[in-house]
Each structure stands twice: as structure tokens, then as C-alpha cells.
Image (cartoon, rainbow, N blue to C red; front, side):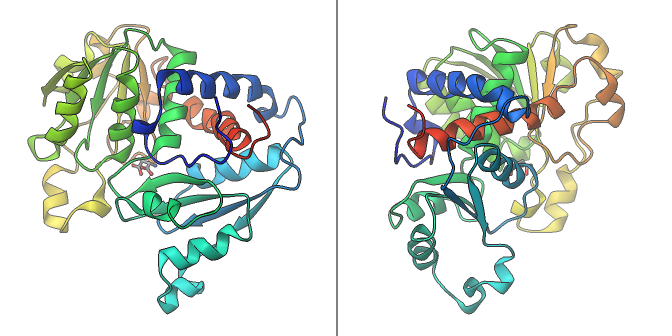
Length: 308
Ligand code: ASP
């Protein structure tokens, strides 16, 4: 399998074999991510970090990942003080930054931005979220979390919250289609998963059901994947307010869940998971955010050609 030089744009580009290989590579690197072992396999390599939207975990875990492997980070920093504020096009920025680095991590509000960037880049582009489109590196860490904390094969999972604008769930459900999952989609009517994605999933042989009731959805699942309502994607605040607090997980609600059920969330959370849930054995979202480090180490080592 040749990952060297590959752009990471959408889960649609990955076969089951490729996904399993990335997860296996992450597992090999986990002790380095935990700082129990040292490595310099990416010494001399530079990762450029271009974030046109806010981020905590994705940006910092990519930075941690390259540094734990001996490489360096080149961070664009705030868009307002770069040439982008002078009107530079994304294509030109990418052409320039590719000359300074060995790979570029890009987060952008426009759907399709990462794909576009890949057409102008001489180094691998890693899509760190393109608007409401995709977020494949989040999906690799989600799959890694599910494999470590539950099981991927024949998974019963509920995806809940903002399924319309949530790029993490868009990417995740494509990946799950390789493992034969039962998917329950839980959202208010206004935030349903786009029909085109549901059709794709059904064509890939997945069992997909939709509901707006959290109570019924959580009874029989292995994993509940909760998401934030994506305020920044709404055309106006009034529309956002109508759905903002519709779904919420509380310790009381969890009484009807299976004891081994895990709750995941890409974070940040707002009101959708009550802090009282954090102390329950179901809460898995902070482990999940740590797993971003070994997974992003694996992706960087593979696309930069330091591992095969
Ligand atoms: N951090 C995730 C993302 O960038 C989820 C979120 O923002 O709600 O898509």
C-alpha cells in the first residue's frame, strides 16, 4: 500500500484495507504519543498548519504528532495578519506554502476547499475540515477509538445532533460502511442527515434508521456519537435558536442504556452532554481526543513516507 505523497481529502477515497492499515500504524505509535518512547522518524520534516476556522484539538494534536516524531511545525497563525487578508487566493497560498513544507493541514469554511487545494499542492494536503463537508482525520481517530473502546465489526451506533451540517458524522458514516454497522440517526427534523448521504449508505448495504427520540435510540447501541449543533453554519441566529438545545444527554437518560455503551463526541461540546455524564463509565470523549495524536502521527508518517 502506497500512502507516500497521498492527499487525505475524504473517507470515500479509502478502502477497508487502507483504513485498517492506518489504524494498525497508529497502534504501533501509541506509546510514542504517550511519551513513553521517543522517535525522530520525521526529523527534518515540516508540517504547515493553515486554519481558516477555529480549532483546538485538530490543530494541537497535529502539532503534537509531528513534534513527537521529531519534526517541526510552520503555523500560518491568524488569517487576519497573513496575506489572505490582502485578498490572496487559496490556490496561491497553497502553492507558496507547499514550497516551505512537507505536508499541509488545511481547515477551511468552504466545502471542497481541501480538494481544490490538492490540485495546487506539490505536497500532501490533509483535510482538517472543509465547511460542512468532510473531516477524515477526525474519522480515523473515531474509528481508532471505537476499535479500542468497543468493536468495529457489526457495530450498533447512534449518530446524534446536527447531522445536517456536522462534517464529522458525514465522514464517519462512510467509513462505517466498510464494517457493516447498524446506524440510527437521531436529530430534529431540521437537522436531518442529507438524503444523498443516506442513499449512499443504503447502497453500501448499511441498515439506516432515522428518529428524533434520543430515549429510544440509546437503548440498544454500542456507541452513541453525539455532536454539537454547528452554530456557525446557520443562515441566521433565530434558526439556530430553534434547534440549539433540542437534544441532550443526562445521567438519568443513560439509565436505559447498556452498561458497556460508550459515548463519543468530537468536541467542543456546548449543552448536548450534561457535565454529570463525564463521571459515568459511558463517557469516552476525552480518551477519544487523545487518540487524535497517535492517529495523526500515523497519517503524517505514512504520507511523508517515513513508514509504509
Ligand atoms: N471539532 C469538530 C469539527 O471541527 C466538531 C465541531 O466543531 O463541532 O468539525
